[in-house]
Image (tube, rainbow, N blue to C red; front, top):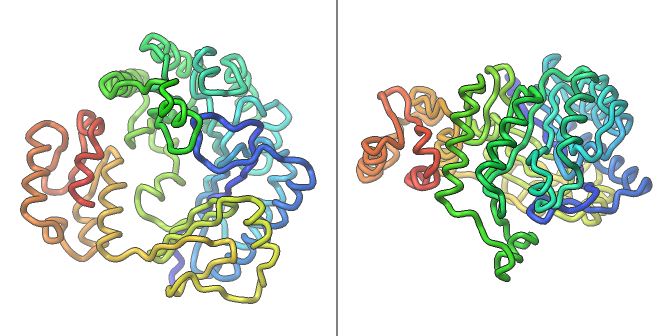
Length: 401
């Protein structure tokens, strides 16, 4: 059997403090004993899946997300990375990425992470405006971002991304413009641009519901987005996905491209998601439940997820087996996020049908209206969104769902 490529996501669930806008799972308890217990459980979960999938895949991307992975010392991450390498065939040029909170960074850590083989750093800057950072509940300030970039460069990192956020209550256009220029002045190779979303059950969501916080208007949000994309292009950043720009193809995030191209990946840790063999499954989003489930896991016992032939651990609490139509819709939905859009020949090869043989004439007419309006382009070989279309991407993508 020919091996396929696989991405691995590792969720580190510890944070110094929960940001009021964030809905990713994390806990503020990260004492030594709990961290040691988590690492043991995580390594056991990785080993379990390695026994079942090792012969099927080559791993070409590993991504440490969170939470705050940089709470961990390099030696702690080394234990986890060694387990991944022992359990899977990790290719020599695999992309190994890690998210970084400037409030937890120092020069010694950066050197240690780079020595482990971590090649790509994604720094959660969010803003260079200290007032905006305070609104977001961040523990760092703009000087901390600059210091972190300096630590990273001196530690040997040459592929560094900054996360920036816009559409934040109280954030002016001038503040956003200054943040963009400050970001480019510290010379990252990649920038991710995120519009603030009020996610259910976050503090921001509650404050909006209570009338204590006002959401940025859709019009102002679009102006900030288009301005950022155009400014980045002037400074040599190529947009390759709705929210991501890079200084050339080699700096694009290979791991995230797996999500957008409907490729296989395995997620480890509490709340982590996986997609293999057309099955999506997710782990329980509670650290105590996750630890208990993995510690009780029999390494030699296969647990089937639902009525599929996909394996999972006791920590899996949700699964969906994609149908043919599910895969088509997801492939189009994620593919249209990329600047290059959908290659129609690749689509035919993957799904053995032409896209317009799957969708009815009304769908095609509706899509053609977006083309006429300048929101999308098609030349018979490719369909993609324009910058104008990316501002209303959900309306266009909904045609195919």
